[in-house]
Image (tube, rainbow, N blue to C red):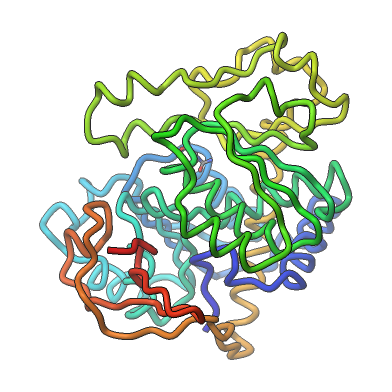
Length: 356
Ligand code: NCD
């Protein structure tokens, strides 16, 4: 069965097909109004969300399906100590597909080991957020008509920003993509991503802590919020929270057609005056999110009916030592200690990609 836990769980060609389907849905929504009649999506949201959960709900409703689930772990049996594994084995009896958001890295990787229905990762801790990536890709494609040759700047919290991790992995597979990672030293993109994405493919990257210096070179600037909920201390968050603020002044040296992207919610990192700039795409991203989630739910359920198997992974999974990441699902649940071994022999936690 096919799931979506990581943005590379889809091939480049499958992503092209999802984008084509999303564009068809956006152009002719009436064609799809009963496409998933009598099907049910369960949204299991262990962590707060506005747009992702509502976007999934709207997507399923516009396909004629129904939605059930919880939006607050405290209102479910999680509060009584139920594991992700047990919750999934219960919910699969009531739903055809599950979208799960969890505050711990890797939780959906535990879920797929038990689920009989497809699992969509709707954001796991500071790890991955592949449906936001599909949203971002659809937005970039609608504006630029290609991904090849683009220079993309990621700015803000690149350490905990899960949307950045998933989008980097997805974009790294296109031709001549260049990444510019703009962050304070404390919030740099994890090393495994630079290795995995850039050392393996032909993309280039640059790391800097100056937005002003690099903004003229960018085709798209992806701003992110500093992820308060992932910090160990409030003091450290307060020190870093306003590291980068995009305003009209800084945009003066940017290209006339540079896309300004942000997964939202925004706190301070983009001033409101920027909303009126024709380059601002963050509210378009929200709308695209619904169409691409419609395409995704529809496609995963079609693949389930066809009995499609997951893509072959480019790593081996072995039993290994317990993960040392305090934000990993293995820190709160008794999951099997598994590791991914990549082609070059590097080992990482199967759930959260952390190297001990
Ligand atoms: C993002 C997330 O949840 O990771 N939001 C979203 O899903 N659109 C970004 C964020 O919370 O900063």
